[in-house]
Length: 278
Ligand SMILES: Nc1ncnc2c1ncn2[C@@H]1O[C@H](COP(=O)(O)OP(=O)(O)OP(=O)(O)O)[C@@H](O)[C@H]1O
Ligand SMILES: [Mg+2]
Image (tube, rainbow, N blue to C red; front, side, top):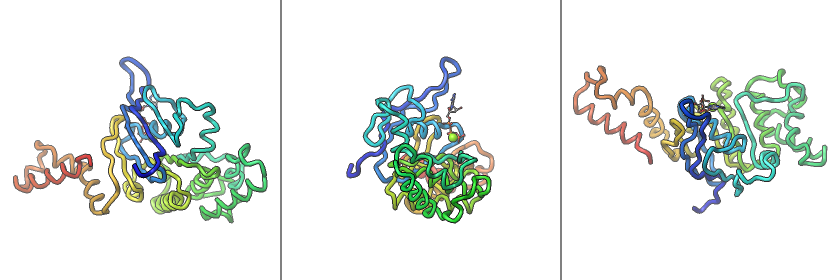
């Protein structure tokens, strides 16, 4: 590895409940992410995406296995709150801004207790609001802002303490597609300019394509891990995992019986190749 690892999980598993009702939310995840990488996590509802993100942010503890972030074994942290505040920035779908604080104050909050000077906190918060294009709305309360603007505030807040790791759980989920794309462009820019490692959970293929690496999860496992390359290949891959892809792989499917055996062979070969882990 030429790059320093920012994230490493070793045989990471998380089981909720026990006995008959046990849910294996994470099942033996071994993941390495280099510092500065921009990773998307995709997969069907309930496959463990949020659980994984929570583990990486020390918001929850593994049942078995280890999680290392920025050189720290998260199970051995002396001060979890300090680790979260200094190393991780969270952006969630429901941007949980404090409703009675202005945009500027929301961005300042994480710096309290970490940056002694109120003047410095204010200057940094203003700078971050500029970065997300909202300096002129610094005094606005969250309910005076649009959903996309609130999400940009949440991103500015996540960056307040210059975290090495930014964790975003469906940051564009509640937005229309244009605002969603804007948010994503912003996160991508911050990944490049701040050098932060970013892991973003998303259901949106376009969001995932804007990253460098896509992890696909299923039933608590990482079933695919690939570098984003050619957009055409990404589109084909999306097709391969779609209902159409399932249909092509299902020999008993009625519509597939309308095509010639040669066509069927070619299609099946193509889909199988695209679905093969790389
Ligand atoms: N606190 C909990 N107690 C019990 N089961 C839980 C808990 N949190 C999550 N689960 C279960 O663990 C599994 C993974 O949940 P998780 O929230 O990680 O899914 P997800 O991939 O983020 O789904 P979505 O796309 O719907 O947000 C699910 O089956 C869920 O029901
Ligand atoms: Mg989730």
